[in-house]
Length: 376
Length: 89
Ligand SMILES: Cc1cc2nc3c(=O)[nH]c(=O)nc-3n(C[C@H](O)[C@H](O)[C@H](O)COP(=O)(O)OP(=O)(O)OC[C@H]3O[C@@H](n4cnc5c(N)ncnc54)[C@H](O)[C@@H]3O)c2cc1C
Image 1 (tube, each protein chain N blue to C red):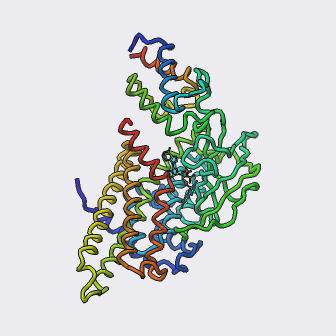
Image 2 (cartoon, protein in one colour):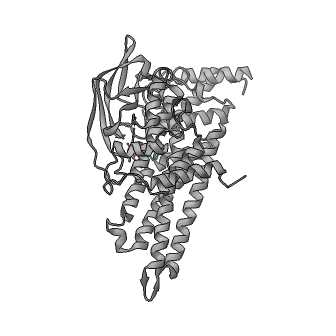
Image 3 (cartoon, rainbow over the protein chains, first blue to last red):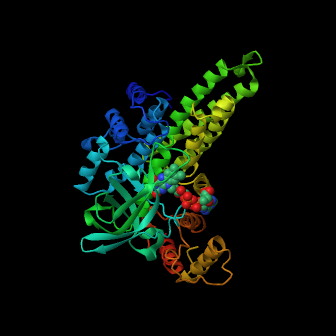
């Protein structure tokens, strides 16, 4: 077991970290636009784990996670990083593994270069944790499929050029009767709704997406018909293992902010970091960051080894999610009133952390996965 | 184990599904031909529980690729799957 990064990994991480600090400034908590995406693409962020033959970085899960972490540790907006991670992990991996040529080459090239933004559209009003009864349907019509239905929460939708979506092709087969599709935004019958106002991750715009008699050519079917569930589950394992790494980077920056503040802020004639109530709080924050980081690296390593990674990814996501919320609460407390004011962005970190307990499968569902894998 | 008939397996699976997923099925609605996937009785979570149960109670390990709309359609098709695997042992 070797806990050091290789020289090559270190170089990559340093590159991302330094580049993240030079991204174009956005409005605080404003939506990241195409310019931010293209600047991140320059760094290689939008293609990390995509195949090299289509302009991607060809990285495995662990190296992808290291880059996502470094991007946020270097100061990139968590919302932008979330959008890019979803584009890569919930969409790019699916296209790389399941799209047929020429769709695969066409889209992956665009995803890697950041000129094509991808969004994942699974969740519906009545299908959140339980995906057994999707109401979006896809009916074969010649060599096309006609899609109808509404997806209720699609991150990146306002900016996206292509949607990875799932629809029932054999409704009598429940969750085993769905298929995966790539749907270009330009197809008639696809409509992106208005911007959804959210509590956090504002750098990543979200909207609903509606399909009305949207005719999707058969070449955009991803994987075999009715295999959408396994396509989706595989992408979620990638997302659960790698995406929380953005929060590891954010937590690292947050902890450094807290340590600085604890050393410089004086009350009762000394730095507040001299009070054990504060210093132990910071020690606990570090403990949460380091333990959840190890679990995440391990889950990614399992994926890279081709070992079953579902449980490891569930453990990693849960650990990072709970660490991120607990640390964000502690950060507010350490900063006192400044933690409650918008200027330092401390409160916003909490609002960015909470959704990690919800998206890509809630924390409760991750505990279910862990419980099941113990035979309960 | 090897002497279990399809009917034995079927009635055991009915009991398991009733108790695990249907709060005991007080209305007695579940039978061997009830479409489990179509009605959402088998969703991803319940299917995982069922697959674990087949492994533990019957020693039948169903790989993900064999979890399909055909094999998991009803208690009848499931009993068939279990019976076949047991008779191959
Ligand atoms: C910031 C953000 C971004 C998102 N981006 C996307 C996206 O890009 N694409 C997309 O398709 N979706 C996206 N989603 C939606 C997300 O995937 C769903 O919100 C999530 O799967 C949970 O579904 P739900 O909100 O319907 O909650 P529900 O399933 O209604 O759950 C409500 C509560 O009940 C609990 N619960 C439900 N079932 C069980 C059970 N069996 N056991 C124990 N507890 C249970 C849940 O854990 C939760 O606490 C996003 C969500 C957020 C917050």
